[in-house]
Structure formats: C-alpha cells, structure tokens
Length: 343
Image: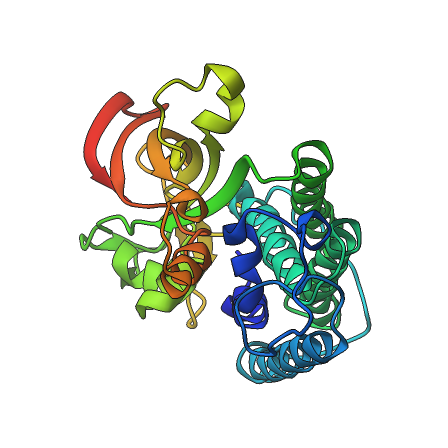
C-alpha cells in the first residue's frame, strides 16, 4: 500500500474542503452568495477566492514536500541508487499493493476535490484538480522507486493509480456525488510462533519474525504495510442506488465488499533468505497464498446528519476507513464463514 504520507498530504491539505460535501451543494448551486468570504470558515466559498486557494496550495505543497523528504530519508537513502529503470511487479504481493494504490489514488482525488471546492472552484475544475493532485502524489513515489535498485518504476502501479482517479471522476461526472467509496481496514493475523527451518536445517526462524521483518512492528507500519492484515473495501451507498425506492433506508447505510489476502511472506513467493544466506521455503500446502473475500455493512460518515460543522468535518475525514462490523467471509481454505466482529 502507498506510504502514509500520501494520505496525510491529502487529508491535512483538504480538511477544510471536506465540509463542501457536508454542506450538500457547490458554489454554483448557492442562490445568494455571501458578499465576503472568511478565510478560515468551513463554509465553501460562493465564488473562487484567491486567498483560500493560495492558503490551501501553500499548506498542501509544504506538507507534500516535507513528507516526501521524510519518506526519502527513511525508505530510500540507505539503499543503493542507480539509473532510472522499470520493474514488473504485477504478480507481487498477491495484488494487494495494487489494491492499495487503487484506494489511495481514489481517496486523494476525492479529498483534494473537496479542498478545491472550499476555495470556490467550480465542480469541473475541482474534479480535474483532484485527479491531477492524486496523480502527482503517486508519481512521486514511482519516480523514487525508479531510481532505487531495490525497486523500480512500476507501470502496474501507475495503471491502478489511474483506475482510482477514474473511479472518482466518473462518479462525479455521472452522479455529482460519490456513491461508491474505497476504504481500508487492517486486522493482523495471529502469526505462528512455531519454529521453521531453512532448507539445509542450519537456521531457524518463525513466521512471527518473518512478518516483523517484512511489515514492521508498530501499529502504523502494520496498518500500511502488512498485506496479510490489509483489506480494501468498495463501499456502496444503499439509498443512493435505490433512488425513489429508497424506502426507510438510512442515508448513511452502506454495503461493502472486500478483497484481502493471506499467507503472504514474500513478494512473489514464500521463499526468502536470511542475512546469513540460509534459504527458507514454505510449503504451498501448509501455507497457501490465497485471496479472501468479505461482505459487511458499513457507514458513509459524510451522510450522517448533524448541524455541528466540526463534527461533520471529523466524520468526513474518517471516511477512508472501514468501520468494524460483522462480516461474512469466503476463501478457498475455510469456505464460507461468519465473523461477529472484523476490522
């Protein structure tokens, strides 16, 4: 999944603009624009406001530049660099990294759109601004990857970034609202502590240790990097799709479908070497790499009715995370299961 700074950039830069979705209308729909615009008001500007634009752009660029430098310092600086090159990773991590790019690009487009609307930008211009900013943020990561010998520029990542921005833009053009949200959740599995041995029997480790090596130990690292824990959800708003037949469905009720994976202990396969050169290979019968699918209720926080603007702001800012709930799950190993609580 894309690093935390990609979500941080769009969240902090666009928090004021999330209120645009909460207000239920755009600049051109407002019948009586206010004669003056308060710079720090959560209310979207009735017409394009240069001061708000430059505040939003300056803060956003500052956070983006600082987060990009921090990521370079933490992730790339200590690895060898080389000439720009590409890397085919379409079959890596069972596709979960591609699902992460898809979700992150969508969220960045959507939140940037609302930030642009806060400045008074028209819906069409704000939409393309959202697409452009998300594309730029994701391209930064790919360019860094392209000069690192450990990774490479991924055409597959760019393709799924594009799909994420396209999902946002197509909903804006068709419905002028986001009826399908992309969300993320993370539930770390209970990694076995039983010993596993290298092919020659000379070295010993555990899957707990392997998971820590790959995905880290802190909650933030696990949330963003553990492909066994990460799930990507497509959350559909029931009332919006039922239209006139919406009945008594609450406006905030969603139904979410999810993709996850299990037994991922390496990029392309469950085979790796430790620092001493010992080779470990997991049995595909004991630890099969496979997808998991989920169905669960969800909440569209932006549709929860409240008159408190700051509460609405907080709710909208959380709308990229799937709420914990009961789920029905299916995979090739365990078949159909019901879990009373899953996140």
